Image 1 (tube, rainbow, N blue to C red):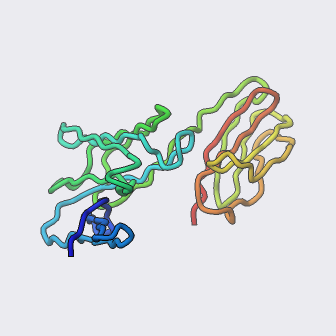
Image 2 (tube, rainbow, N blue to C red):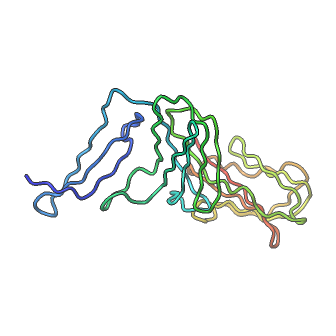
Image 3 (cartoon, rainbow, N blue to C red):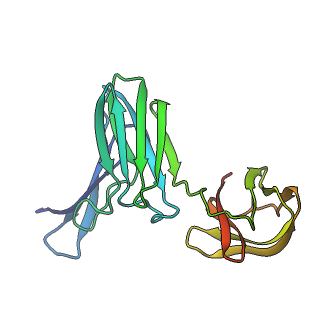
Length: 221
């Protein structure tokens, strides 16, 4: 039968470090379609590294972000994009083939917001998750010096002064999952256990009047 390809995308479907390929085909009749997966079964494969980006201030899928990898003085740049072919999208995991290299010299991840994260001396043959870092907030004399730790599912605010503050926990869509008014004492101020929340990135906002600080929390299992 006659097949007409209408969409194509690549991804590491079997998670073996080798990119596979899928094609959408249309038969003679437009409503008759099927997909074909071309699995990369090559026995000769070099080293590789992948990056899964998570936007916080930027869009959640980090579309438009750039990953610059430097190896032996040579730079390679890849972008997270939202499409590849007709009605198709490649995997959002940025994949670099490294040949015989056993370590990556440096990587610079630039999110659409302009926020950058830099890494060096990375081990190969793994996918690294990179979350956009927006832990830099706005502080003032009202808030004093606030620090933050997250251990065993309990967020803890460390305050240098005693003060009332509004505390909000937001998910990446901006929806409030926790809001409270709390008297912060000098030293450690543990909040409630959030380890049962869905896995993902959250923002903890501490504010008083027009002054605030924002901290990033990653809930994982």
